[in-house]
Image (cartoon, rainbow over all chains, first blue to last red):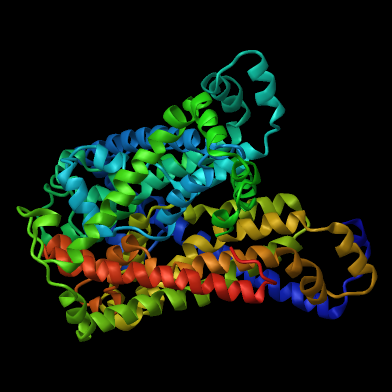
Length: 298
Length: 312
């Protein structure tokens, strides 16, 4: 790197770098501006936003949208449901996936190839939407949390990642613990789990975020409004354009209602993204780790 | 698919008696470790595969999958001759193929550009920012798209017009692909960035000393370093052309843009779960996944040819 600093850049290099950095700058702006716009717009007075767009005059700012969003029960219930589903799904999914990955990581495991074929086939072929729905229906899992938590809990791709990670851990560890008389179960919980914290963190992160952000399963399996996760509440506000009952009930004119409804969307987005936003700096250190784990070919 | 081919030498050389002994001695590995995952796979992945039979019968709930009368290939004949189906198939293909063509190179370019920034602090900040949209949910993303593009939204007021973009079939594909790039391009670059940071610095120094300019460094040092990852990523994405996600297309659909936005998965949903036409929609879904498998095998074969006999 030192060489580069000392080297003089040629004219063509300067042009290339100039164009390159400009493109990069434009991309960064394109990512940044919409996000900032949403946050700023959520504080605007609906009339000002509608007539002249963003205003930096503090008299035009209001917390009205946030008050309406935060006073709404469905948003809070959605939060609670989503948190519960995501946490439960993460525990189940990571646990089952790690458990299965452990024997599959052993070269001498009898039946390894056979089970591998069984698992890998499901990565490429499946029954599809309707047969899955009929199955869940026949199992009487519709309108229960199990329809959300169980079908996707065992993730073959994650299993392969965990298996690769296990394989990178020296076999001597098992030899040593087996001399001490530890069974596989004891070895797994006392020795492997602490050693495998990075991969556990990565899998847990992906499971949690994946569940938090998805809506399809909940949309088809949970009909009970009280069980809906946050994404479905958001869907009715943001996509179907129907604010939750009570959010704008006090407003008299229809035109006014439409403006406030629009403003509510911005505030809803900010509120709903807050948890992940707060967690973001904490889990960013796992990004690179996750990628390094994933790039090792299974 | 090397996962499938790799035979473990140890297991193969054992006699059946030795294998049985291993299983008996290590029963915990089967019962405690493997069984939960295996059961979930058999029930929720292989279970629905049995339900594929519905695609060949006049399914009704009371008779069940095994009792309903057969109709053979009736559904397949019906949808293959239906102009609607053909246009949904084309929508699916266009959306994912154009998405791949536009979306695939951008993360690579981003990574190469980020790699040129030598000041780690700035690079880290940029990365943190461009990764962020990846964590926004599909619903929030589509909500933002709808708001920005609404007749009274900021994009229209910036342009001084009041077009209702979400109702225009011809705008749908651009909206879908551009918002996809906005959301995932930064995050997808992370893999290339990681590979580039592991690339040999010596080689790069040598190239600089030899007077290679930046484009030559990229061509001879950095691109070879990430070539394998590019190939793998391309296979994975090309193989997924038919399994393009339901969630985003559905959340961006409006009644007006359906001519461009109805893809096979949303069609199956509408037909099967909303209209209750189980047999027909299962047949469409089956058609979709069979093409998907064929595509994966084909892409893997092509890559093997190109990549000195090494596929996925």
